[in-house]
Length: 145
Image 1 (cartoon, helix red, strand yellow):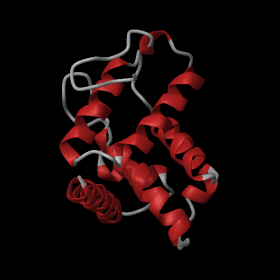
Image 2 (tube, rainbow, N blue to C red):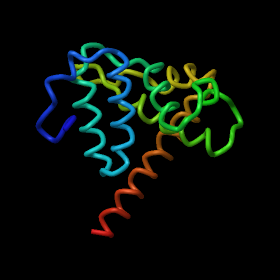
Image 3 (cartoon, one colour):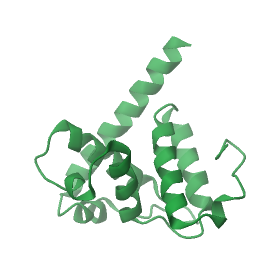
Image 4 (cartoon, rainbow, N blue to C red):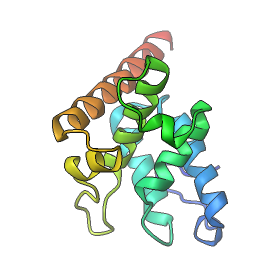
């Protein structure tokens, strides 16, 4: 078990950077199975247990690896759905990162600059689009139960 509602594995703070990246990649794959609030809490628990703040580059590497693409492809403009959706996922994940005392770590313009100069409204659209997919997937899962 990595994290549940009230438990964080004590091994997380002792992990190497590579192990942390793998944990984040694994968690991002699991988050689509939860509703938005559970996803936010899971991200907070994982990030809160890390010894340092997760960088935007770490998130980009994990999301790119999860989808079998490169970070350079993730940053390309005018790309196909196979690239745009992972980019939206990465932007969403970056937006979930918070400082330990609560405020958001990365602003919409910061995320846009990381991806090569996307406007903050484009980032906002990406975050909302990925959140809709999470919510839709959670609703389908609940209907099946």
